[in-house]
Image 1 (cartoon, rainbow, N blue to C red):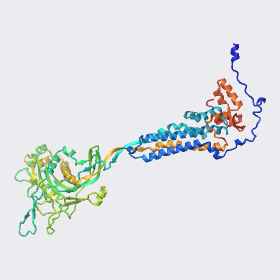
Image 2 (image 1 turned 90 degrees about the vertical axis):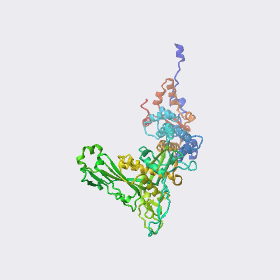
Image 3 (image 1 turned 135 degrees about the vertical axis):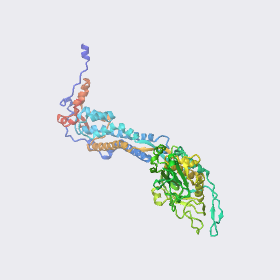
Image 4 (image 1 turned 180 degrees about the vertical axis):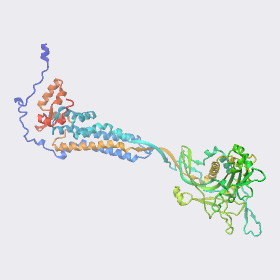
Length: 635
């Protein structure tokens, strides 16, 4: 028991301010003139003590500026345009890490200096002094300092910067994203993509012969021996197939599988159907009770009519002619490009209706329709995406140049109709697109706006249809009639059927001279591009500016207070640390394991002493003035 008592550590005696043994240590008063070393140093000398921090801020700012510049240069550019051995993200990461590390060094060093600046102007407990020192070491210490600072101080800026630097590099990295889009492929690397276009139609053949029908003829007639284009006839029958109505596409090439052809115009065949039921003439037969003959007044030699008895049998009637001037809706031949017209007389209702209403059939008029095929210019917008052609018909027009398709012999006065059994040699029929409409449709100056159709084409197409379809009325359905007429007449939607025929013929005509008149487009490839989300760079920019401001402010404050830049120096803390009285109290607290409580209770202030400063216990008045720096929450 006595041995234990004898070996028990004894607390050191605490020197008192009035102790004679320490009188020499406290002999000098506050009014003593500071030594020369305590005077304010020159700005140049002070800045030399901050050279590494200034260089760190310059390196941080320049690294961040280099990142911004590099990102701005590559914003929107192709990913494959970066040719370095490492990725753009890696290079940006290096710059961001350099900027963050340099910024952390400068701000952390200034937080270490801030403890001397703060405690030289006001008092605070030792726990706060230690919090300043820990804050200069990293985010956790900065968070602790922010917790202990109860009043506003610019130290908060530095501590907040150190804490927020954890997200500095991730935000810069998050600003770099990628997106894909179709880019133009250089024509030198791949063949030019093309799509069929008809600028001039010249199919079929004509042979000429001189025939004088009477002595008054002053010019020879042209006798036709037409050679029909069987490919065109095939396209007509393909248009009758419902399946081909949706899959018929023009010929095109696209080496990359993604191409754009823009807007372009091409010759084609168009269709139009008109309801002419109101023109039907009804003739009640006196010799046959209940029988009425319905006639469509075409000016043909053949009578185009349908009787009540045919309606009861659910029969219709169809007629074809190339003499469009003898029809009802297509008889304007002055500027017409129509080359074929079909007339239809069809039952207005189903077969059962006519059989059950025979007593009132004279009041039921059949439905009459005229459908014409004519030459036109179509404006298309075409693209190929992933190997699939998408073509949109933007506009269609049939503007005929009235000075075209004229006889070569100026003395001959020939009609403007396109088809005549005997005709004179003529110039090409020309269609055009007005310049105003061309601009509205996006057709530039290098696009063709005038299109030609040869006389051989006009006569051959009319001959082709007339050879397969007689200009005599035929019943529908009728197994002995033309297959073409029977197929068309059986359709419930004549508009759709003729539109399909016209589109099929157009596709054939566009591809007839593919090599000579193809329209060329632009090849594209799906390429990844850089996209910079600039909003993600705002936090790093704010931290960089705030850090630079805090460093500049700390340098200025240190110079204004006449202090040396001790920063985080351990030697400075040893040389200018606690006075003997406070040091003895803390030693006793460590022996009693109450150092944390004592650090919160003891309030100190940096006082000038013997050529420097020293942390001395602050009087109660100073402690009360420094209340914002006391941490009552943890005491």
